Length: 193
Image (tube, rainbow, N blue to C red; front, top):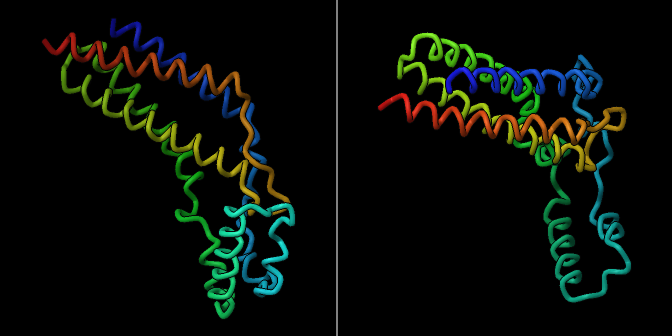
């Protein structure tokens, strides 16, 4: 059973590698980060912000939203450009770049521990590999969520395309990872007794 998990883990890694190669991540962000663009953008005044509210919004819920927008605009009117840029910046800068490294790195290290577990059948190696595959799954889901949000974001720089993956490959990689996770847990539990 450990060999089946090893082969499935290799298949998942291969699908993930192919997913990375066929994506646009190599072209998604320039090699050098641009200077702080929010600081160079003109500061909006409260008089211009309510004009962005759609005119068709006539319901009570939309009036409450527009009132909230107006209060926020009045409150933020005196913010310096640096504070405005800080408010518009992502909560964790470089999160996608960190996940692009960490997800495959954890998967490869976990694969190495699982290979050791397959050869030696040492319980510690199996549980370490299972912990790493768990962390890899969490990192992968976080990466997927970050890329989905970046694709939907309207605050992306103009020359930067949104990250794009083929949906079929994402489903193949995700389902193979799910089966790998389940079989790794089952194998580690069975062989630990």
